[in-house]
Structures are given as structure tokens and as C-alpha cells.
Image (cartoon, rainbow, N blue to C red; front, side, top):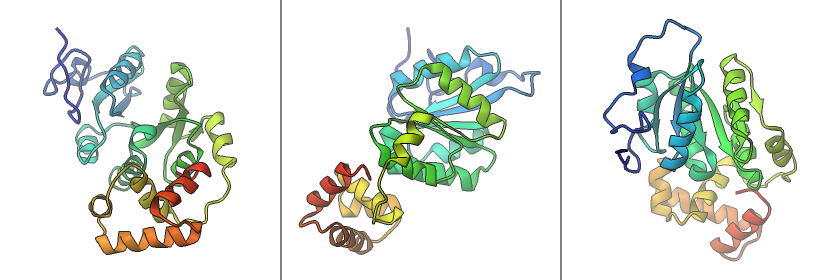
Length: 234
């Protein structure tokens, strides 16, 4: 019987408990060219499906999988993956922060994000941080496999569909920090919650939101979120 992995738990196999190490992670492979991959995807069904697809390849090893959260960097440091695959659609600004943290704390781990073309503003922001690859979530699995192999060789691989979507986004008058704050607010986070996530004071977050409303000529915070969303900035 398959074991259900709770949200946020580290995933190390399709039919295993969170504490069990996948057999492929236990053995010392003689092939030094094996690409070690960490999956950071909130939806356990998608995470398991991708793990199965990647693990079926002779040159790819899924060393761990988990939902996004504070434990991602620590898990990456422990497993030393070559590549981390992050679901940008599900995590938004939090995933971008994780990508930045991985770049700073574990430079040898290159980041690939999974994204959707219908959120061009988010894609554009992802391309501004040190991501080595971006794959359209509507693309066939072989696109992800090809991107992983290219990125593992030190190349940058951006899905053409995502690149076109990002280029088509008009320049935002908001700074990256203001966009991040507004994006979190659009997800229902309060100023206090945003402050905790971004390690800022509540007053600083309120100042950011006030500047956003002024720049967008919005009457309310909800109006600012609507304007930014319609423009494709968040």
C-alpha cells in the first residue's frame, strides 16, 4: 500500500514513508555523470509523477522531493543536488525567494522553474533572478528532460513560449520588492504575514503598499492588485 506524504513532508520515493531513503539514493552509482535532482513541488501527485518520469532515465536520479517551505535550502545542502526543479505557479514570490537563497547558499545547485505562460509577469520576474532554466507546464515531459540535461551542462534553457510571454509584458513601474509585496498581498497575506515572510517590519510593508497604490493611481489595495494582475505584473 502506498504511503501518503503529508503536505510539506520531504518526499524520497513513490511508495515510501517520508523517512525512507530511495534505493537509488543509497547506492553509490559508478556513473559520475548522473544528474542529481531535487523536486520542490507542492502538489504531491504532480511531484510523484515527475519523480517517476525522471527516475526512469538512466542519467537522472531524484534524490529528494518536497513541498516548498523553509526546509528547502537545508534539504538541498544535505542532498547536494545538481539541479532543483521548483513549481513557480504554486509558490509565486516564495519560490523566487527560494531560488535566490539556493543560488546564494548552494551555488553548485542550478534552478529550473516550472511556470505557465498565462502569468507572464511572474515569468519575467523569475528570469530576473538566477534561474538556469524555465519550462512551460503545458509542455510535454521530454521538454523538462531536455532542459535538465542542458542546464546540467552549464547552459541556460528558457522555454520559447515563456520567453515570448515575458517579453510581451509591458514594463512595470513597480520595483521588484514592491511587486513581491503586492503579489503576496494578492494571495491574501496580511501586512504582518508579509513582513514575517520577507523579514521586514510591518511598517515597511505598509509603506511599500502605499507606494504601490500611489504609483498605480489605485484607490485601494484591492484596486492595486487588480490593476497589476490585469497588466500581467503579478
